[in-house]
Amino acid sequence: MFHRHSTIHLTLAAAAFVLTGASHAQTAPAKAAPIKVGLMLPYTGTYANLGNMIENGFKLYVQEQGGKLAGQEIQYFKVDDESDPSKATDNVNKLIKRDQVDVVIGTVHSGVALAMARAAKESNKLLIIPNAGADAITGPICSKTVFRSSFSNWQPAYAMGQLAAKKGYKKAITVTWNYAAGNESVKGFAEGFEKGGGKIMQSMNIAFPNVEFQALLTQIASQKPDVVYSFFAGGGAVKFVKDYAATGMNKTIPLVGPGFLTDGTLEAQGAAAQGMITTLHYADNLNIARDKAFRLNFAKTYKTNADVYAVQGYDAAQMLTAGLKAANGDIRKLEQVVTGIEKAEIDSPRGKFKLSASHNPVHDIYIRQVKGNLNEFQGVAIKQLADPGRGCKM
Ligand code: BEZ
Image (cartoon, rainbow, N blue to C red; front, side, top):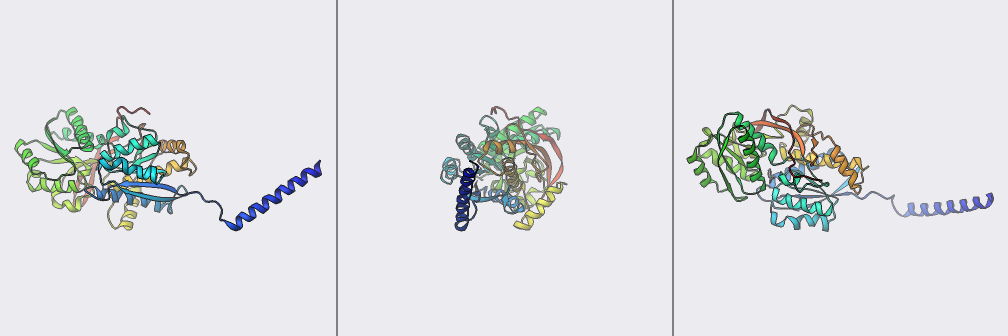
């Protein structure tokens, strides 16, 4: 018996040796497939610069990890979403269905991101949003596989509403682009401002991405509010801040807003933006060692200063890494990836943050003032502000 078993063992071992030996001779050892990362961002139009900064921030983190995340190679797929909601579903499906990416990173525009969030929810795909603040994404349409590394439109707006009331302003006019981000930003501002005793005299808007502001500015001048609250970003923010200053109103009626009004735009805005006060989860001279190292490496790598969009891209890569580490690098273990991100503390240049139950960062909202080419930190408007996540059920 013993002898017979030994023979069988020997025969099997010999066969195994021959097979392994043969396979070693012909092919390299099996390598894990790279993680397919789909970047869906605006590379053209008024938000093009924002898209590029997000991509650069994401790739900087990957580069700092030696070109891999949690030990896994990364393969990129890119789509220019043009900040066009009408093309958003087709565009995101180029990444999800055609390219079969493992994770989608995008985007800037709230209207485009709403379509992406719906597609991600339907296909159970991991989506990390590195900017768009649409409240519904971490509200009524929240989902297990959708995360934000940025903010909700409500967060910086509500903080500015409270701050404006504290400063003693009583009557405000709001002006913005007529789409989810602008409208929700104005709503958040009104909530904070009215709580503090302020009143909204009038809410004005203009279609996205139009920048013909003259008629609106004439109306503002005739109504004489104490303060003007405005949401614009990218190229539109540059034009609005310059047009506002050109009327001379900035000397008597302060123009305030969420920090997007002056972030990544100061070189182009020049004198027009000096002294402006905004609220945001980032500022240019935070006294945070992690931020100093990040800014130094960003400036060295890209020959330009980092801004809030670069930070959000960088943090999207950090969130993905936290998820991958929890799943031992295996992106197919989606439940483990999701739990890893939910539990992570992200060591962000903005300051460490965790995610709320609806997957939105809980972070300090800073008061910033424009001095030269910097949005200088002036203090904290609201500490550890969580989006209320109204209507989110997971
Ligand atoms: C948005 O559409 O959500 C958005 C765009 C630019 C800056 C901030 C928010």
